[in-house]
Image (cartoon, rainbow over all chains, first blue to last red):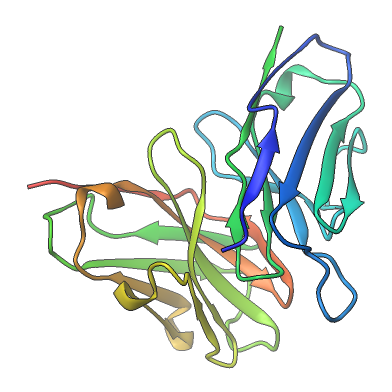
Length: 111
Length: 119
């Protein structure tokens, strides 16, 4: 299995400040078709996961542009330019280059 | 609008077989590229993808659970069924189903159904 490692696991952030979450994979996520299948999900308390980003940097419909994704190979980052109260929850990276595996999750809270 | 809803027993005994149904609307599982996957989440833990099935009946399973899982589809009923054999207390989790389209995986999720394994 491809192991996805996120850091930090806990992220206290002041409202209006930026936040960044790192995700590293144990193998390259570059697929033979030239695409890299790395997604980011948000899970608010008591809710189902919601996909935010797919193929590293593509925002899903309705996702605010304060969310952005970047990276390549084995290193990826999710950035929130200015954290809002509704961003509280757990964030997961997911690779789907080699079946599907998720990271452990990063819990974002308001400081 | 795509919606999915999971259903099944809330409590199963160890060694029993779990059968979960995902009933969906807003898409057809006979349309080219469409798929449905199952993901579970033990209490307080991360997510684990169990299986996916595609429009052409291609099926993919988690390598670690493959010998316990079976995923099937009923296109006429807009349903996908997941069975998991030999249930154990460690299988206690919320089970989600989610829509996929080609390589755009798990883009819309159901609300999940909680399953407890206990005697």
